[in-house]
Image (tube, rainbow, N blue to C red; front, side, top):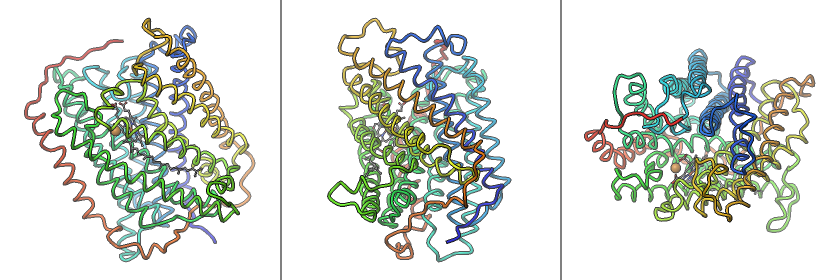
Length: 549
Ligand code: HAS
Ligand code: CU
């Protein structure tokens, strides 16, 4: 069946997002293995001295370019694809979306310059009183504002579609993408307030001091829902595309998929204090409420796990799979997009379990600020999300460029090397954390390293080396595909899995926005309002800035 065609201009526009995203990943992920080698005591520093002034500058480049730039650009490109392809409709105001994209690009360059000049070595969380050059804060603000503008362009496109199709169910990939963009607009109010009312005027010398406790609270208002802004695009692919790719399977339940996204919208933001369990300025009662809500936001992921695996089992059995688990072998593992996303999901499972450990207040007191946390988020954002995005790009880039995927076998090898390298790296980081090793410390130089850490630190280096190879494989496949003279034989089919249950039967309350949005805002006000009012009315602008690099 002939699929809806995006215009060449739209394909180029979405492709420019992937280009910036992959360039950011290329530079940002280079510093990952370098940090791992440092932990293993392989002193590569003399060789990179001209490049980077310190471990912390390298960690800032790694965290900002990977966690903030690679993700945001890939996601805005993928959401734009899903809305236009899902609604079978061009962007309502392409200029608006282009303005948003270029504001993001200017923001990245504005923030990258001080980072590379060692004027913003503040890590991806940029906690004050560490103080960066004003351009860093301005740059990040522009990236957020640019993504808001692109989101407005998606909302306008959707409203145009809704007006002409008042009774139709919103196609799932468009619905889920609009919801993700909406979640982002709500949750980024925190970090926008932090930068615009404190960090930017402070770095410009307009105010002397900051209130670190209030700044952290603003940051984590955004910081946790940020992870679902990263995760939900991967979930869109797991629900609506992967079952088709894995073996011509179907989405298990359209209603349940939508319900899980609604729960993410409602619960993503009002739980940020689970990053602040040890903060003295947050009363225990709010920490308790946020921890309960954190256990609540665990459910939509569990719903996803069960229904996506059910869809995959359906696909596996359609391919002749038998037995309780043997159907797994019948999935299309030779398709790099499938291999990458299945392996991403498997490791993400363990990342999620680690998230539960983090969310448990008393366990967190042992884990917080230890190597366990980077162990957790290298399974979640660095694998569940990043390896899924790599998997999506293995069909999306050929679709956008009309060029054949270069050497699919290399792409499959890339997925497996990421999987193996990450198991070794992340597992050793988790164990080091349990042994008391701190995060964000150059452990290779630490004089206090107990003997029992050594084998794990070596494994961190080995895992990092394997991930380095995998990252190089990915960038090679992407570059060679973009340059490939061999065109695709015919139009690349976008892998959309139909739903086993007719979406027209999906209850209408799962396709109406107002009640869910009001509910989300009400919950945010209830669980953040009193504490924010208290912190703001007692704001303590007493801390000067420090530059420890
Ligand atoms: Fe987290 C810290 C709790 C999810 C990222 N997290 C972080 C940090 C980052 C991060 C970056 O409560 C560090 C921030 C910093 O620098 O300080 N996290 C959770 C919980 C979840 C969770 C409860 N985190 C994520 C996701 C992330 C992410 C997603 C990025 C994308 N996290 C915490 C807490 C902290 C924290 C505390 C603070 C720690 C501290 O003290 O600093 C939950 O959302 C997890 C739910 C997930 C699951 C897994 C479901 C499994 C699925 C896979 C299905 C399998 C498939 C494949 C499809 C329940 C969906 C099948 C394959 C076949 C072959 C069949
Ligand atoms: Cu969190």
